[in-house]
Amino acid sequence: MRVNAGELGRLAASVLVAHGTSTVDAEVVARSLVESNMLGHDSHGVRRLGQYVRQLHSGQIDPRAEPKTEVTRPGTVVVHGRRAFGQLAAGHAVRELRTLAGSHGSGVAAIRDCNHVGRLGEYVGTLAEHDLVALAFGNADPTVAPYGGRERRLGTNPLAWAVPRAEGKPPVVMDWATSGVAEGKLAVARDRREQVAEGLVLDAAGRVSTEPADFYAGGVLLPFGGHKGYGLSVLIEIVGGLVSGTGIGSMPGYRGGFGTVLMAFDIAGFLPAQEFREQTERFCQELTGTPLAEGHQEVLVPGEPEERVRHERERDGIPITAATWRELNGLLRTEEERP
Image (cartoon, rainbow, N blue to C red; front, side):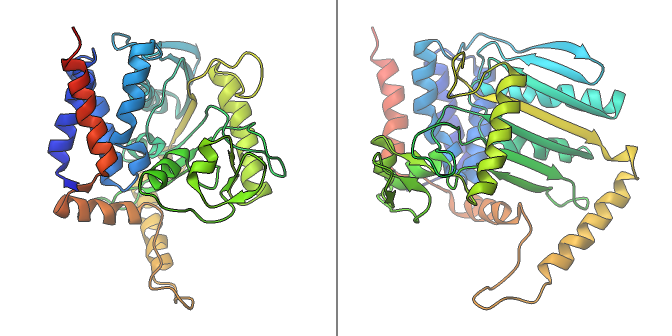
């Protein structure tokens, strides 16, 4: 089925309010989730609400918590998420980075006690729109085997990077997991009863599998690009886990959550922002004008596929699986039925 973004956002916010979240915070989180759906990243969209509701009731998410800032040195801050929704903590970090970049030319923010933030590209994209180069990464619960291994030692450990394009154009945004597939995308494939490509999943015995269910039965995800994705994931695990205070997922002392670090610097410290935008735009046009290889119909720049999906979903609505729709409405009814 397809659902209008406004309707889906209202339903998502209603679910969160029904489970103890303030209207203001619920709307922020719902807007973030629906934006992921609008860009085609359904793995980070409203299907996450079931997870969030469970975490609200277990105490992992505190719906009353407000993130706080601790300035550690000029240009660096720790944002204490205090187990608030990750979207609130990451949004707070974005605002702090804009201030730091304005005052010092650059800034780094690490988020402690941080829950799932949604799509990292949302935050670096926002910073890029303000003439900043932005980078974000984080470590998560171990679900990925190291290159050559068959047990879980690493998180999916995503990385996002964004720069501005010409005025009126969305930023160039790179945002992906260092596993070959994000766990959320695997769950979407499972819900749709689809198989996945080889090289993404091993079953519990360490055999190659194309069945998403094998991961959830004790299997593992694999790094993208073999040893290259593995190496990148290792560094994100170390820096994201230790700098944020979350810890390394497969080691003693891991606190759970999402070990998030964001960085940004002001382009104007090196060249006029408008010149950067213009040269970036010319380069993007050079890329998309490249003669095509056999079997390909076009060349796109990172961020353009998502914008195409946005235009389609603005026109036709957001596709929601029957399982997700039942779950969302069930979350509302479940709370209404509580004594």
